Amino acid sequence: MDVQLINIGKKYEGRSNYTLRNINLEIKDKDFCVILGPSGCGKSTLLRMIAGLNSITEGDMYFGERRMNTVPPKDRDIAMVFQSYALYPHMSVYDNLAFSLTMKKENPKVINERVLEAANVLQIEEYLHSKPSEISGGQRQRVALGRAMVRKPKVFLMDEPLSNLDAKLREHMRVELVRLHHSLDTTTIYVTHDQTEAMTMATKIILLDDGIIQQDGPPEEFYNQPANLFVATFIGSPTMNLFQGRMSDGVFVSLDGDIHITPSEDDATALAAYEGKEVTVGIRSERFISGGELGDTFRAEIEVVEMLGKEKLLYGKLPKGQSITISVPGHFEYHPGEEHSFGYDIEAIHYFDSSTTNRIV
Ligand code: ADP
Ligand code: MG
Image 1: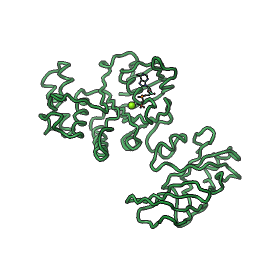
Image 2: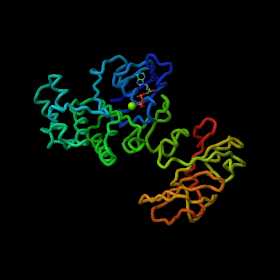
Image 3: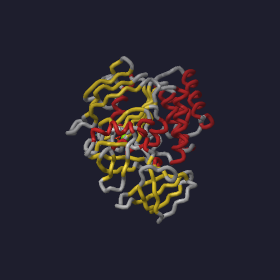
Image 4: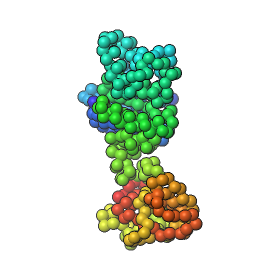
């Protein structure tokens, strides 16, 4: 089912400011849409508005053709999974899964079919007669998902469902959730503050900051064409390197003079209007070049080398003192205290307007 939000705003009673402003977005049927952003930016507020648990102050919300603003939660055909998924401790896994359908007085045969189907997809069949206390955290999280699945909702809403799991299990559940989404094909709206979850699971990301959408689109766009400096530094690890400078005779020169970059032809066209103006350049750690044809170069002193296996992270300093993070393949030899020349992949330089922070090219 398509979900559409038009100029949605939210102001909590008793608060002077809007928590969400001008939210416009279209989530297509079968999308896995991730609402991403730092803590307190309004993610849960937005999800709860879609669920009908929070009122809508301004704007319109549609599921398909139907305006949903005042439709009660129970009539929205949604199922929600929360971070704290309280299962009923005295009931078996089977009864936990069946609970919502039993309450709706669904036909017992249908209930049994749906519970077994969910248990099969989630691979928890062997625990159906266990109590929640007898199974692991990951299995409990799957039961929580199963409880939502048996209702066969038109839209799944999930609010940080993996936050309470340890790193390894979280990684595993990420893949399982994507698989589950492929097999169920149900529109899913998933809230997280974790950029890795967003980048790995989403077909579409909405990045919120301070109640405003900063960018929406597929994950690749966030990584390769961040709309502004907030997006550029929120997505990607290590954080994108930034250099303040200005355009001088068509060349970017950092304010301290350490970095010179001659833009590619395409970039130069977009930067023509910025001659003499302040520009911020962004370069991801893996887009520096060492060895071979370097073009413009800079010198950096390596201070710390972090060996991560398939890559090494070099933490260094430019001559005037600015820090820089460079990633090289893990088998390259670099040592603290050494000084090296590096170049740039000229196709991978991001240029931002320093005053608006918006992407130029
Ligand atoms: P997130 O899920 O992104 O961490 P929330 O949507 O929970 O953010 O909160 C966004 C802002 O709205 C916060 O400043 C929070 O304090 C405020 N807020 C959340 N719920 C309420 C409420 N019921 N009443 C008033 N303010 C609230
Ligand atoms: Mg939240």
